[in-house]
Image 1 (cartoon, one colour):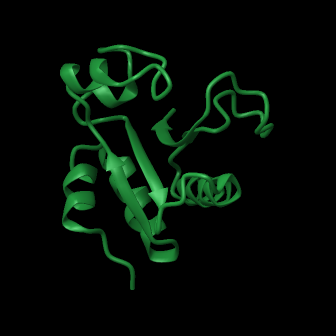
Image 2: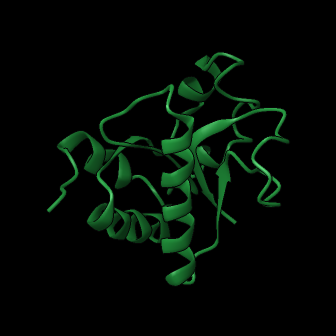
Length: 128
């Protein structure tokens, strides 16, 4: 049985209860690491432009509890776009089965076309 590390559990605890429920369920079928939940103003504004398109307070990560979470399948392979996309499908499906609508940073407009983004954030999931 998969289990969140202490760091992942601490990060997930900063997130909206719906995100906590979804990723607790996702963990039962796919091991993953919680990279980031809530971000403070300092943390948000320190991110480089290739990691975010927005400054504080315009990120879904900036609310408390956070309405966004960055999560990667474990072990993390940043170059494996297929695996990141597969994982996103599981997350979106688990969320839908629980009545929680989730938007993924690999398909911002939710049109199921994965090559039409101007900015990809393949580990980003947010409540709609």
